[in-house]
Image (tube, rainbow, N blue to C red):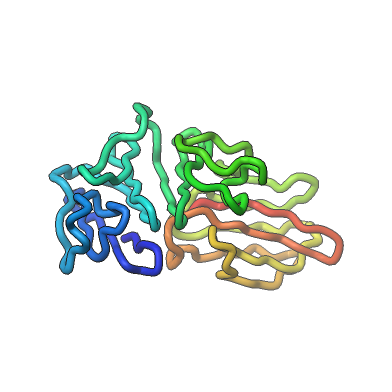
Length: 223
């Protein structure tokens, strides 16, 4: 399920792969004509039955089908963005969104007024999905440089295992993509920690390891 800006609209995907929406249709976020201002009850959007993920913001809704194609809402329904068939994750902000491919690359589109896309302050935004030059730590087991700490598996849908080894980190803070703190925990050198992320919404989370001298971060994807 995905909720929109200020929770004025929402989407959900059924187990049969159909997409349903309700609430405001401002900016055609429901993929409906502008003369339809809102939907008062959950209503099927289109006829496709192969939706796998959906994310919605203030200006648009994006969704991924089981064939790996990426789609965006408009006044005449949803239309495909590009021709790529290797998208597997999408998340939306108010006026921007992020998507990830099966090869672990991260892409962004939309406004960058506050640097939210990570493109630097001189770029106002991008109208097409643009690959972001950032390190996304993905794999069976990730080792933070210059330490013995291990974080795995990544991506994950249930539990993240953290082996603190002989590192000197004494605290862990986890932030969501809005910068909100969702978890804080103290560490010891011998900690073998299991972090249950199953209650978290799908998205990218920043695991920040700290001590008095340094900070290390790992991006963990919750599927």
